[in-house]
Length: 526
Image (cartoon, rainbow, N blue to C red; front, top):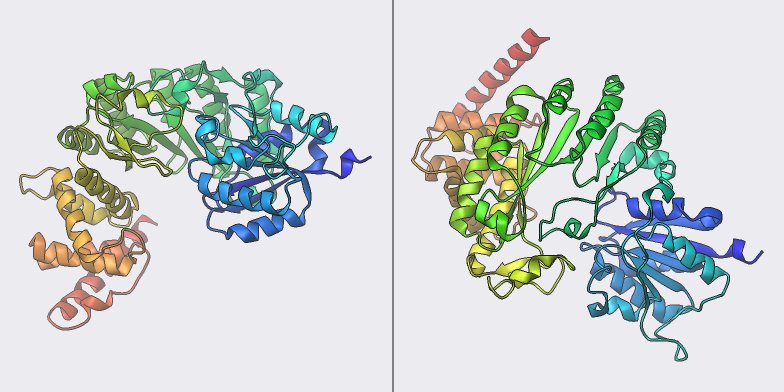
């Protein structure tokens, strides 16, 4: 009787409310007879730590589980420190990718009782069963008779056929307002040294019929947006086709599907299927990381650049797929010049978004083998970004960090399409990387902080840059600004254009003309 009253509390510290803790749902789904004793509580890293601790302690858990990730490791540490000071009797169990590697080097080991490394779907149940049966004792740093370090558990990778799927644990609230994560497989066959997936032994697929039945159930509950976390969704064309065919049968339900795709692997049968999806349904996250073949070899990344270009051309011209491509700054052997060339080549391929990321030294990844030969220097603080290396100075990394934020703000946001198109096509013998680098430097001179720049302030900065730095014609600059700022979200003319004539009168004239033109197009198309 005592077991049934002891709470197993699984807590998540998500980056934002929109995200859901996929891993914790797996743990609860596989708790067997203990499932009814388990509750999941999800917080965000922006919440006050003491408020989170207060909520946790008010629930009086016997066992407390946390997933530790690169984005929440400091916050989790702060919370478990407080909990162990207030109530050391609670058994704290940690898991997740951040704590699974270099475990002994992390302070969390002093403020938790158990750390499960790797996939904990089945081993967490076994641990809870033993704890509740009192066959093992909680190991608190504040109890002198017990070990001062957490016990580290390194379970075997569970057979995927034994793992129960967690999708029934998504609530109506989750389905209506949050990201629904799903996976048809685990693992990755590639060995890219900067990625945790390089440590995977193999790719394991969930039973396809069982998985599709779960997707059907989610759809019946109202789920319309699915984010697949499979590392290589298109690795097996036959499985990919089965999944896409399933969703194609439900295309009338306004679904949205996000997949991570291998960029150089799109066989004809998969291409034929992708072309059947209408606009707004498919989004492909295509990891490029580098287009320099020498750098690719340095980090054990296998990819066919000519095939990548061919596939992007297909996706751009033959499909309605929204493409999101990634590049990494700071890979060993990648200079600013080679990155510039890769960026320009990727822009030419035409993905809808380009994410410029800064290299992170993820715990456990073999990227560390380059530390000496390429003088790799990383931040000691999560997310452990590169500070400098043999080919990139600290100042160049800083410059690229700003470039990345400004590119997100202007190009990836979709708010400034007319401006970006004009900047790219503007014939001044400079490539888009150089043009945008100049813009990034200009924005730094006007906005010291990378965050908190309002759309209105950004609009004014772009107006000044177009007219005073690039010397574009006033009428052209007005058309661009009004299309991007005013008609994107149906805003009024910005105040800085209405201060004085002749700009005020000209702005009103252009605004009215474009408004009428947009109305005519909309009326005609309808």
